[in-house]
Image (cartoon, rainbow, N blue to C red; front, side, top):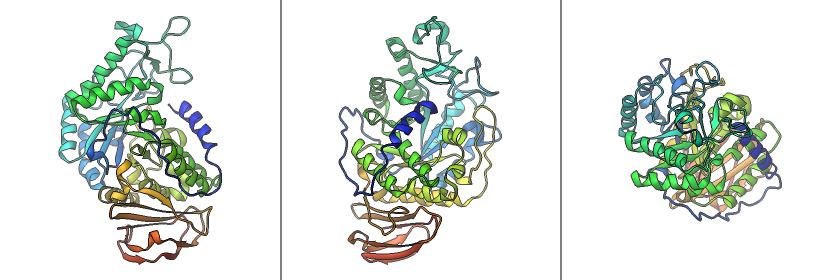
Length: 455
């Protein structure tokens, strides 16, 4: 999954250079879009669940005990990494990869039964949250039944043998053939199955850009006939917003990594915001994150990549346009790469990150300036005296507003901001103090410090 994305992100990173500039709001086109966002998704945050590593038991029943805590955290969408049986042929490690799917219509017996999963979905929905299921449409396990019943569903190499996805080292899976109409029909049938049988609320689709977009358009049309669904693409390509509510903001993650390493500064962050407004439709949701399962397992923990800036960049992902992701364990200060093919339990403990995520998610739910897509406020960058280290912006929607300041350096900085946009009465998100801010505001912001004021 990561090889292709790494190449794409590396190419995109060359675009993120240049001088500080005013953010442009030249929205892209949503031509061909075949859906409307579910109303409940506009103020949602998303949480990624790795069932295997979540509890000692590693099953649905044990995970269910965490639901009150997740409700209290404030997440609205629970994204479950693949829950299907895992292939045994050419398996990686002892337990294998969740992304090597042996049966699209079954549950991994390590996690529980189909009935237990259905009950879990119902309980989550009864608590006012929603469930999306990770889906691997580009490839299957070597021992998927289709390899016997329908070998024509797969691409073959020059010798007529099944082959891993092109240009990858994913030796535990084989490439499906989207030129085969019967395979497409079977995949669509499997996608409809979980919405109809388990009443899930949508999908997170693995390496979505490696699957033809016209297939996803057909999928979205058919799923929305059953119920309004939410679709997340593990990809950044703007054209996927024809079928998907949300795409990955890999570009932002790359900018944050370079800033934390001292290789880049706020200029690139502003350039990134410009690019977002230019390249994506106004109503496109973009998923913001400091880590996820791929980043954590293969590229190092957020603490290894972002260092002392972890809280700062977390607040950034929670206030920029987009939907913030919480990867399981982040709220407990997860600071180890989780094994991907073995059992590796998350250490659950009280941690200051829980309160940080909780406040950001609550603000997302209640303040329209932070809502997703076209229902949120446009970002307006404010001029500061320290261009390279200080990032400040306002977002406003109806009578809701946020005003932020970030110090992306290891030194305290006295920041002066002059703008009529900030003259207002606010509440400080993290101290809950009520403050009246004038059009000329000065404050010393500590190293890696941040301020979020809202009304």
